[in-house]
Every structure is written in C-alpha cells, then in structure tokens.
Length: 458
Image (cartoon, rainbow, N blue to C red; front, side, top):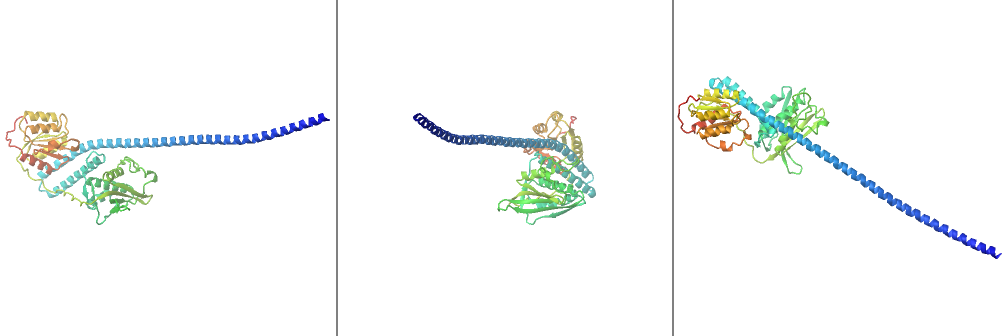
C-alpha cells in the first residue's frame, strides 16, 4: 500500500542518515584519536624535557657542589700547610737563636785554647775540626730557616759540579759504609743561580731519602746534566739522585712533596725532606720530577733554570792562627744574656788582655753606662731582657763609645741606621774568634782618644 511504501522510504532514509552519522562519527573518532596521540606526544615531550632539564640541573648543581667542596678542601689543606710552616718558622727562629748562642760559645772557647796553646799543631787541627762542625750546625739551622722562610735567600751563580765535588766526602759519610756513591757529572755544565746553602740542603735531603730507601745497602748515583725543552725554549740544569731501593708506593706518589708526609714508619721522620727539595726548586724558578719503579728504585730530577753568567767562585775558608791583639788592652762592657756565651767571650777577651765587665740585662747595662765613664767599648746582643740591645748601643754611641752588635737572627731587626756608622760593627752568631778580633781592632783603632783611669764603678 502507499502507506507501506512511504514507511519503507522513510525508513531507508533514516538508515542512510544513520549510516552517514556513523561514518561521520567514525571519521571524527579517527581524527580525535590522531589529535589525542599528537597531544599525548606533545605532553610526553614536554614532560620528558622537564624531567631531563631537572636532572641536568640537579647534576650541574651536584658538580658545582662537589667542585666547591674540593676547592674548600684544597683551601683547608693550604691553610693547614701554611699553619704548619708558620709553626716551623717560629720553632726554627727560637732554635736558631739558642743554638747559635751555644755555637758562638764553643767558638770563643776554641779561641781561648788557641791563645793558650797556639804552638800545638795537632791541637790546632782538632780545633779546626770543631770549627767545621760548628759551621755545619749553623748551616743546618740556616737551611731550616730557609725552608720556613725565616731567613732571606742569598742566591748567587753557582756550578753544581763544583759544589758536588766539594761535598763528596760529606755525602759519602752521610750515606754510610754500606751505600756506594757514584758521581756522574756532565762536562760543560751550565750555571744556575740559587742559594748555595739550599743546594746543599737539596743534596742532603735526597741522599738521606735514598739511603733510607735501601736499608740493606746499595748504590746511589748523583748526576748532573744540561737539558733543553723539546721546542728549543727553556734550558735547565738538572741535578739527579737515583737509588736502588724499594720505590715509592703508588698510593703515596701524589703526596710525597707535602710537608710532614712520610712513608717511613717509626720516629725520626719529619716528612720535611722532599717538601724542602720541592720548595727550594720552586723558589729558584725550577721544578722537581721523579720516576719510581716498585722494587727497582727511584730517580729524582731537580731542575734549575740556566743563567748565562759565569759561576762565582766560592769564598775560601780561612785556616789561620789567631792574630795578636792589634790594639792596646781596653775596658769592655759585654752585654749578653746567654751565660755560656758570656763566660766564654769574657775568657777569650781576657786572654787578649782586655778587661771585661759582664751584664745580662739591658736595663742594668744602661745604668752601668750612666754611672761610670770607664769603658772603651761595648759588645751587646740585640735580644736582651729589660732593654733591647739597640737601646744599649744607642746609649753607648751617645757617650762616644764604639759598639760591636751581635745577634743570632739579625734579619728580624732593621739595623741599617745603626751598623752604617763607622764606629759600629755587626757580627752574626756564631762568629769566629778571628771575626771578633777584627771587629774589635776596627772599632778600637778608629775610636777617639778617651784616656781615663778605671773607676770603682766597674
């Protein structure tokens, strides 16, 4: 019927519309899934970027934190080293003052013996050995002061071969009978500029280190060489010490130049030996390298910069008898707070014919100078209780008296205005009897004529 046809037509239309709707929905769902995937990918990329950025930031902060901690640890280590060196400096200064006083006393006593037994050649030789020992002790103190920077350097142009030859006997005694010393000194060795006392210090420390590396004995080789950089630029004079010992442990190699670090067990090892070598090389403008094979030995190479000036000759050491007094006997005020040195110096001056009055306190020395006009000369230490030696010297000069100033560490006091005067001489402890006689002769011969009779105030 027409109604059924109409119904079929409407129903087919509805089916077509539903099909179109389903197709549109399906297409939109596909497009939505595409957009969702793109959105998810974008969100995932953004989150990934955020996470990666956060991780990178955290790691950067961690690296900066670790660098800061490392720098802080390095600064703390440098501060600790500086404090240790400062402590060594204070110890060295006090030690140098006291020991140099006693060394000067020994020199003065040797002078007394020379004056009493001047014709005994065998005794004179023994006294020469005593003087040499005093010089070595003073040299050791100088080296300790140099390491702690309590002593100014005195560099000069030197020939390392010449220094090694002069120290050959001492180095062999230092190594002992069970260690052989072989010296391989290069011909035509260049000159370098360094404090000679510091070169001796380098050799002693390296040789002691080599000897301790070979408890059962062996051979130590001391060598010199000229060395030029591969690019033809820097030129170095190299001092090498090689041993046949046990070598340096791998874990200790980064620390062997640190002050107070030692691989040796037990007492008697300060840990300053290689640190001193390193310090000397750096102060001279050079550096130190080493090569060590476990069980096969170690070689240290100390590099010093070449200089093109010829080496300066080393001053010859005096070997002479004491001269007779070059001046008439004089009245001497001796101001010295070290009893041993004061007694020995007074005895020596007495043997020369001088009349000596001793004072151990600066204030009492000033009072004695003010009370009596009975002295021809004042000998005073710089460091005194009561009043300083500078005050005593100034009072004596104001009275027209010549002065001999002595001290164990003159670099700590500015003496230029004082010692530049013609009536003043300075002697660094430990001074030799010959030096004291020369100083007395110079200032007493130059003094004004001040004849007077000794008074009871003495």
